[in-house]
Image (cartoon, rainbow, N blue to C red; front, side, top):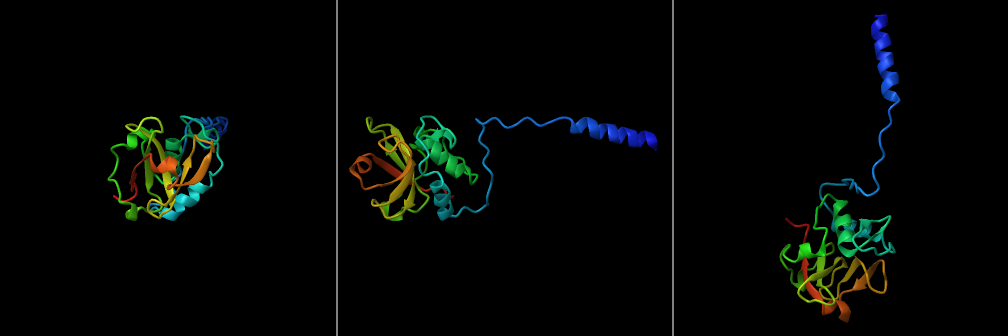
Length: 168
């Protein structure tokens, strides 16, 4: 009996002396919040990052976001995997008519220099057709996560499509 107690106590002391390695900051863990995603909750979550600086090729709020990093990070929080690069959206989903735009839909834009390449993304936060507003990580003047009107000339002439990534 004493031998079993000694063995158990020894094992407890031995295993309690080990510590777990901390997560690497470059690995993003997306906690799953709920199984059914509410469109308004996506925008509420996205707005927590308003003012987060723009950083090319980043999807980490500590370092900053680029446009696709921001979109993938926000939807990833809800367990929805989307392309990490804006080019991955060119053939993704079915283009919606402006009257069918909804909060939480993803806006896809051509690059400002090349109208054959997808170059920017955003998430609709106020749906009103081509007068909608969207939240995005801007590499322009703002250099941060911001809300912009779709009907500004800069974005209207670059608009490629709007897709619903939530409806299956």
